[in-house]
Image (cartoon, rainbow, N blue to C red):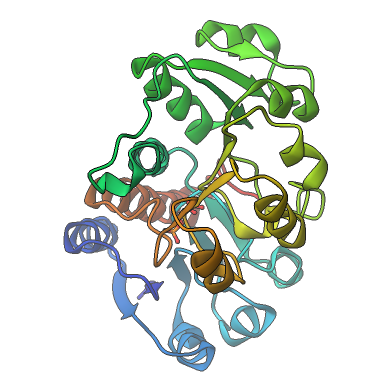
Length: 306
Ligand code: 3PG
């Protein structure tokens, strides 16, 4: 019998797991669950007899691919697949897919929610500021970026975007002002919301030069990946600019230093929370299961990334 392993250190909502099971059983597949596992060896053991694997931010290393002797497909239930060794997967003929757009709304809502929280001084009883009328720059205008733009417009913000892969006309269709470069975007906007993927080109690309060019009251919002930030430069900006604030859906390495020195100028989630809603889990989890069925039964490779 075809086996689908769902391996998530950070578990899906129960309804999502039930939905995945139903899709698998309808196709005559068996679903097994490995949640909150402690180390990579647990994943390597569990994947040994799996034909398909559904993961979230779980690390699919070369060792995991090699341990999955029957493995044919890995689906990252979510957007970013920087946690999967694509080279190893390709070498072993394992197809890798993501589920683009399925958890985007949860991430976009969190970005705006954290912005309100920090603008209102963590709801501590003092007078904060409003988002209306402020400029927000969306760095990469994909699924999440577009939704952040839509919600920000609802708040009455002025929305700008830079994305070298999306035509200006398409950006304008969303009521958003296209910019020609990241430099231009950062110079113009008090708020910057990051939605670039983590890859060799983008790692540590958010640097001192960009951040220091932002206008008074600069706030960087990171619901993308911590790796895209040059953390040494971020530290320098915190020191150099008293007005600079940083919001991130995952703390930087030196969070304790920021937390003790720059009170009121940051907010970090304790754990990556962007996609952690029942709806996002259901949408991404079920899409992953359906993509596995479509691939194994009909060789559908629509969302293949390797
Ligand atoms: C994604 O890339 O889809 C998000 O970062 C969500 O990651 P998660 O599934 O680990 O919460």
